[in-house]
Length: 143
Image 1 (cartoon, rainbow, N blue to C red):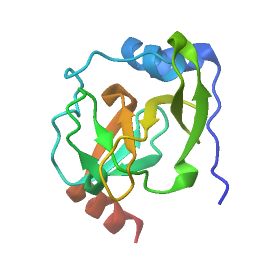
Image 2 (cartoon, one colour; image 1 turned 90 degrees about the horizontal axis):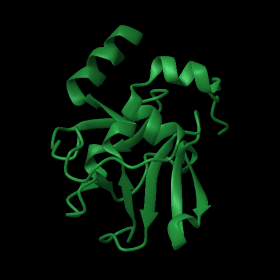
Image 3 (tube, rainbow, N blue to C red; image 1 turned 180 degrees about the vertical axis):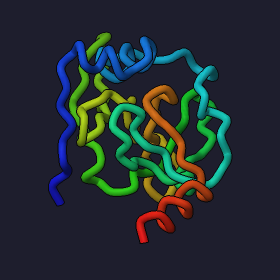
Image 4 (cartoon, rainbow, N blue to C red; image 1 turned 120 degrees about the vertical axis):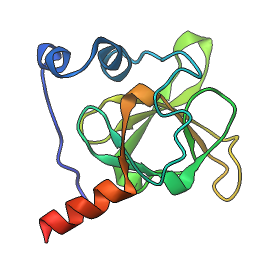
């Protein structure tokens, strides 16, 4: 399924994102470990892209990796992210970006637990969280 894209100019992104969100999402920065707003979140719900609102990760796939950033076993659907080669800083990594807006989310590594063996290491500032109760309210409003 083809995802609708969100395109904005650099100036438009600066107007709608906080300076920290802009640094991470648009300039491929990284937030400080163990400081993110969602690192310690254990509530049930869905993690969305903080730039465009696309649903990315379920709380059911979140796990404690000890790395300082929210970590997930997998995405909600493979079409929600794009995986790109990242050879910056003299390392080979796989960058994870939102398929809708192109925002930098973090990286994925092959050192996660079973069943996927993946660790999507995602910047908390790149995410918003929609709790299970919020989801139920939205479903009621749509029907």
